[in-house]
Length: 400
Ligand SMILES: *Cc1c(COP(=O)(O)O)cnc(C)c1O
Image 1 (cartoon, protein in one colour):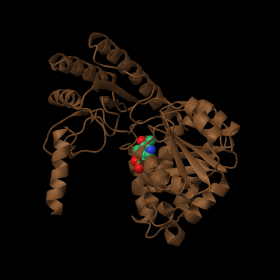
Image 2: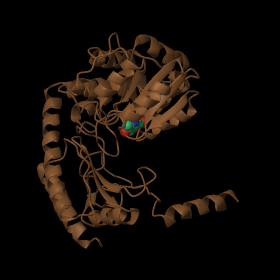
Image 3: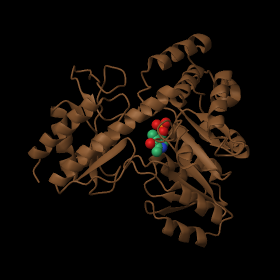
Image 4: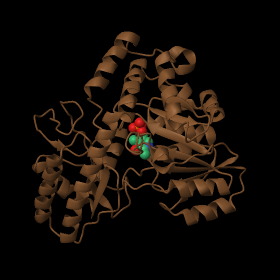
């Protein structure tokens, strides 16, 4: 009965070309993965924006960390799983954000998903309204749905709608919640304007910087450094599995808010702490990010982004069904329209040895199926050129 029911639902996915499948890699994260069936691909999929996921110094730090700390943390943070390695990483992240959030403290989580659910449920009590951009990441959406707070969503980037919602709001507490870099479009939220709105309406601003940490700002400290923002009202969430190349996440905020997360956030309390060896590896990764090597990698990445966009703009000029939304980040979407078109283009690229995700509804709005290219400092210019050449050929084959 259950199996038949689920099989029917799976067939519904097949009918709309929405069923996804796993691909198994046999090599570490990097631009040139080999799949377990022996296929070699050139990948534009990962969020390893700086190429640190397999960096020798970070790998060495993880090995050193395991020798120093063993493998597991053994318990949740509040029971006995909280170590010096966690505390040192939290101190480094707090110092990164101190110029932007006065007195900031940091708190580690096992993933960004859990950090966002923690923030939404612990801060979103019945006295609170959450104001959320409609294109926010699924983890913020899920957290908001679990929270006791009222939820108001505003169309992507529409701060005029947000302002009206704030004016009409009658709960004593208000939290504006936004991705800093939107994960499907690569565009930046207008954080200075959002912060002004927060200040004007006695609201707080929760910022999900999953794609900004390590990538934005002269020292890679993320979106707050990029925009030069400073306010007690900022509540920052950065992930550590993307540009930082490891795993986990941190919330950085006013110490009272951090203390409340420790006391009440269920995704913090009821889970085993991140292995301390990972915290040790992350400390090394963050040191690389803010040092000269990180700066050089960000410069190289910016060059790749400009090169890819120039090539994509040429292709869009030749193929009127395509659209290239504005994005200065390593996330570059090419809108192709329907699911079958996105899949056909993805398959034609794969036949040429390229691995590019075709992103379809419900992850993105209907009619905006896309290829999403993500660039890494581990890519070369020649690899970007190879992508553009293959895309040009694949587009010739595609029925209009
Ligand atoms: C990836 C991502 C998350 C989740 O972070 P994980 O550490 O992968 O769980 C949260 N928000 C955004 C915008 C993301 O892209």
